[in-house]
Length: 293
Ligand SMILES: [Zn+2]
Image (cartoon, rainbow, N blue to C red; front, side, top):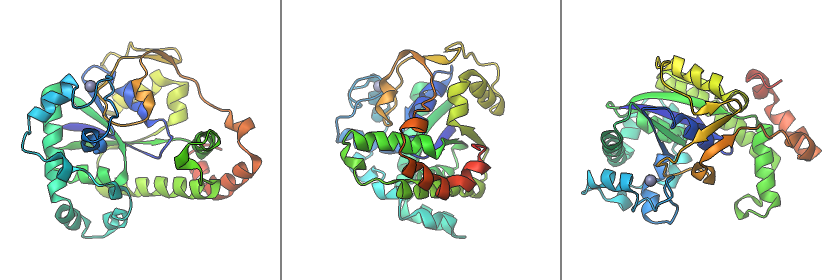
């Protein structure tokens, strides 16, 4: 099974990026698949608009493993947090296999069913989480490749700032110090993780993708040795999107049709100066390393 995993920080454009890759012939977008079991208990729809349990694609997938218990197979939310340091211990593979043996079996079965039903060359998973990425790397049947999608912390923080300003309950306590530290740690952990896993890896900047989607997608196809695939859905500074069957991600996964791609640089005038100063102090070395200065 060929899987491209998008490793990324929140508000970094991974949903749009993943949707675009999913338009390539033979590529199949599943979105943030680590939330698949959650879709049996909430009302968030599939990328196609149907309830996941009513979607014609997922119904066929689920029918392939009727004995799986969605509740007990659910990937715990804590998977993104406290188990992370274990990844970097010398005996991490053994430990993670012991702790998550049931989940590894479930994930493997799920991907096999997806591959069988979609008949795709490549499955795109935008789950973003480092530890979930590590779980995938422990499944021998999976041929894993990782794209680390990076967005400048200024753009990320501006996106979070706008959410806070509009009263989004999750972000009311958000502040730029906390946000910048998390952005730095997330990217450092992601880089260390891909080194440890040792699978093919590509770093893509969100801004580079938005400014030149055709060049970026061609770069990725070259990397995958699939440069002959048709990418006519990309036009100058925009893309034509068709519905996917992604089960998780931002609401933008439901956007279809001709979608112009435009870089949001409003943070330059609208992000408070205090935010900019704090971000610069905390994140400048990594921003320089990524070529943002
Ligand atoms: Zn669907």
